[in-house]
Image 1 (tube, one colour):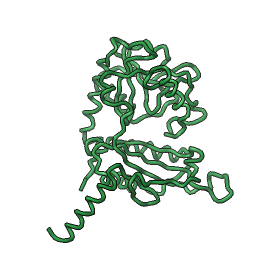
Image 2 (cartoon, one colour):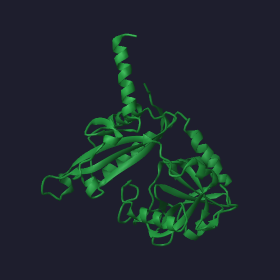
Image 3 (cartoon, one colour):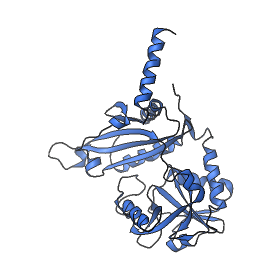
Image 4 (cartoon, helix red, strand yellow):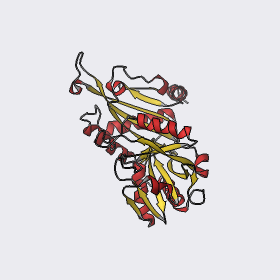
Length: 313
């Protein structure tokens, strides 16, 4: 082996050690995720004036990355912000973060913040928008072990922020209502929560969309929710599998009386609920419709239409 090849091998080994916990892109530089920082005056921190998106890498390939980038770009435009990089460069940045980390299963986040205004200004138009990205080991909302037995969901008395106030289709960091619902769930012996709207219809939970199944038919809330990429995948798979599915208002009572229920999220896929507010759904085990969709979802990760392989060193 020549000296240059030896040196390249040494650098790769050192990089993998430094980036083993994850990689980030901040101020146009790649850094180990533990060293990533944002300015304290960035309105993304001070005012939650930001949008973001989360994709994942599974077994060395991104899943539906272009769909996540589409949604991210729409959110940036709706907030009247602009990205300092084009889509091609952002894709390159994400791939490089994954490559540096060496992670085969990863959680990948991209962020656009309002940035820092001119001194003395309170006008958001005076800010220079900022872009950040990071990659860490894959995050499960609920562990595979919990998914096998099914989860205890509570219907929270906390109302989700109304869509008339904050557009839920723009992924955001307005999580105080979600955090309050989680704390209430833990107080009541639950593992997570779904919030309601002012009419008593369920909306969404902390980081997931929700689905109810009754007599083989699937329903999911159609208003006040993030239009999740995994939610979209469920809807598409249901059509392919011949499973009736409708997006419409779903009352809390309907969810409690369902035969099955499940969550969908990039951070975990399709995850079954087997208990709602302390009462079992169906026979208290993950149901067959949920199982079919869950299996099809993970199988879809092998479909080249939706995967982008990372070329690791």
